[in-house]
Image (cartoon, rainbow over all chains, first blue to last red; front, side):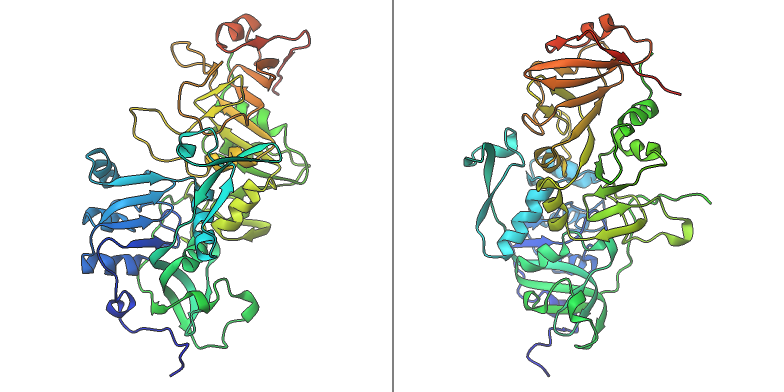
Amino acid sequence: MSGFDKVVDSYEAALEGIADEMTIIVGGFGLCGIPQNLIEEVARRGTKRLTAVSNNCGVDGWGLGVLLNNKQISKAISSYVGENKEFERQYLEGELELSLTPQGTLAEKMRAGGAGIPAFYTATGYGTIVAEGKDIREFNGKKYILEESITGDFALVHAKVADRYGNCIYNATAQNFNPAAATAGRITVVEAEEIVEPGTLDPAQIHTPGIYVQRVIQATAEKRIEFRTITET
Amino acid sequence: MSLTREQMAERVARELKDGYYVNLGIGIPTLVANYIPDDIEVMLQSENGLLGMGPFPTEENVDPDMINAGKQTVTAATGASIFSSVESFAMIRGGHVDFTVLGAFEVDTQGNIASWMIPGKLVKGMGGAMDLVAGAENIIVTMMHADKLGNSKLLSDCSLPLTGAGCISKVLTDLAYLEIVDGSFILRETAPGVSIKEIEQKTAGKLIVPDDVIEMRFS
């Protein structure tokens, strides 16, 4: 067996080492491209007081909504948390801390975190409550705020195809936050709809190189649609 | 008569130019896609990572992996590209999107915009709106000119938490098209049949009415 073989054969092994109070970075946009199987394993383990970094926080009973229902998340770092009644309830009753972060800033926090850059300046949020308490600097006559990067103890990622070495390809808009999340985890776990042998994927078409990935597991969960919109023919 | 939502979308669409990359927000901005003139090509950017958004799919082509920023199932148009959220906001923040249309609760004479949060009401989040207003050079805001009681939403200072500061210069309301220049709203066009007097009454921020105000026309 190759030292590069990242495939594990159980979800228990996929999330070995996850513990209370850890930060998990979770890929996906809405319900698209979310690592549902890995989220369900976190639910099964009952890991508590997690900080969840994800663009959204699922819907009631699906995606990160599963962990909300179990009260496993104590802090959410997200850009948009609509479509989730349990989130609203916990937030309004003070059970859940929420750090609303502009979507592009959130993506860049993950990218920079994974790339070894601890902070960056962005114009996004200047002059708004997002800028409160943050360093402001002017470059070329425009004002920017200093945003700190994010890394996670674990990153949970969903891919269309992964090879045994952890090279990943995402499908369509299920890519979204997944490649940035993959770079920002101390332990990055990929659930893939299909796992193939090394050499199968075209090296030039790989979205996430295997160096970022520690574990790969077969995904089996269904993929849900939030708003099914149809063109009548 | 004030403009309907469809007329607002139709008026905004007249600002589109051949070869524009365009980001449309939720609500009235989304309707702009229905009024793209036949003789030009534009590409719609959806901030979840799609440049070249096509129409909704047919029943048999629905793909849970293929959605827009409103989480609706969509298709990719001819010549589309798909990428990560990081790449998507590099386009937006980096000023590569030619034209952005978004809704708002309030704007003011400093070019400030408030569109994401009403204190006391549940906060759902800013999504990508703060990135869009910070990065785009060419933005049109579509909004109601006043609330149902006649209270202006075009102010000298926004009362609600801001989405961005000093970033708005074009506003289309249900009553008028205005520009924001040097701390004033400049009235450029009125909705058909809407009097300048009504617009003056419903604009709380400083309003300049030039001699050459045009009445919008719709076929």
